[in-house]
Length: 275
Image 1 (cartoon, one colour):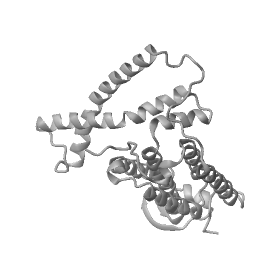
Image 2: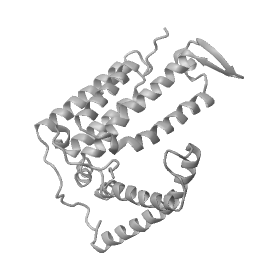
Image 3: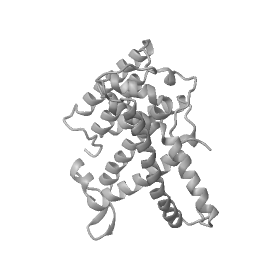
């Protein structure tokens, strides 16, 4: 059984980078992606994200299931934007080019399509980097990295433990799924999408309860060992910063500053091809 979003040790230069470097890159990358609506910058970021995703040697089996869930969420998000704000693109770009009328107040405009295209691209700038970050960073080393940038080690440990338990939760889900199938409940691709959603939903609640039991066990064990007593702690898995780490951090900062300057050069964060 393949592990979803779990760390695997591989011989790539991305794996060799410090968790601090990857965390800084990820945070700055997200800031730029959230701030800019310049299509040119976003397309460059998508292409670069796909390149580093490929370099990290991340297998589709590790991210495929999560990616499909994200795509469903993205579709709902795009539809919701249009339903609740069908003229958002028109207000942003200042023009209105109607392609066709749908019903009532809903017109499909070129400006709205372009705006929602940018929303979709923004997702794709971040998704590959999220996957790459999770599968190339040791959870323990990640906790140490968060502490190095000023985040409490209690928070770092909580996130580290959550990442460590992703494979365990996946295994628990598979066990429950197989038990359901043994009782005659069809959950494979042979069943309709609606039936699969209903069957999967019935797994969520026992999975939540079993996860809560596991959380209680871990928290009690950590409390008995005096976790959190001191304000600081040492780290066994911490990596020292090397030349490549400083180089990547420097290039990331330069790119983030340049991208934001380019974005706001005309006083707006929206690239407007309609003027």
